[in-house]
Length: 67
Image (cartoon, rainbow, N blue to C red; front, top):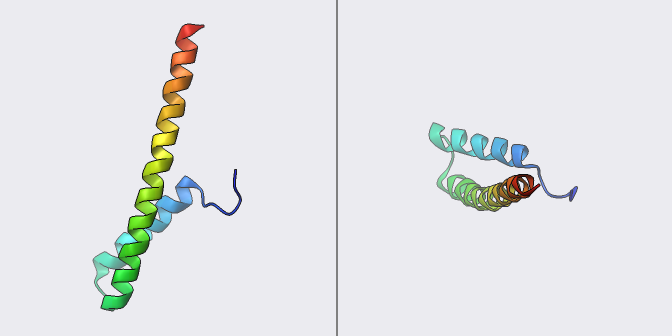
């Protein structure tokens, strides 16, 4: 695993933190926009990772059924 890339779990945790910060509505507009941008990027990255995991599980199940 790439040591510079955050884990799925740590990315989810950061996304949760961002959502909580934005829900509190205590950030400046600039801070909110930066957090929103970071959250979108995390969401996109998590979606790609999740799709990769789903594909791997499907492949493993298919290989398992074929044995």
